[in-house]
Amino acid sequence: DESSGYESESAGGERAGAAAAGGTRGRQRRARTAFTSEQVCRLEKTFQRQKYLGATERRKLAAALQLSEIQIKTWFQNRRMKLKRQI
Image 1 (tube, rainbow, N blue to C red):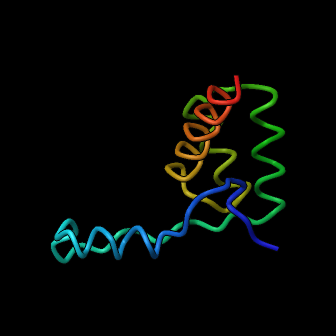
Image 2: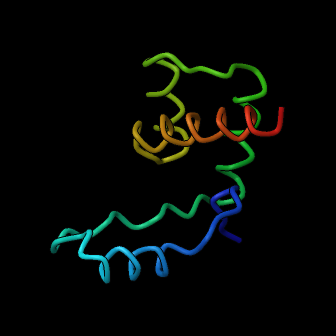
Image 3: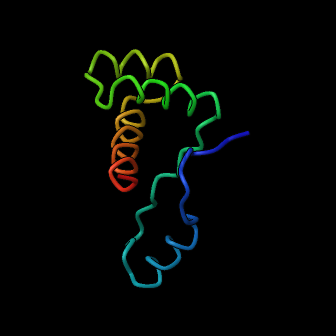
C-alpha cells in the first residue's frame, strides 16, 4: 500500500496541460514520490514531536526511511502548509 499521504490531482493531467501551453520546453518533471504507509506513519510521528527538522535530524530520518534529505525537507514543508490550511 503506497501513498504520498496527501490528497492531490494527478501529475499526468498537469504535465499535459503545461506541455500544451509550451511550458516544459523538453524538460521532464521529476516523478512524484510514492511514500509507503510506514514512511508516512514515521514522518507524521516525527512531525507531531517537532514541526521543523535540523540538518542532523533530517539526515538521520532520511537514512532510516531510505529517502533523500530533499524528500524529507519537502515533505515537512508540505506538511506545515497543510497544517496552516487546516488552522
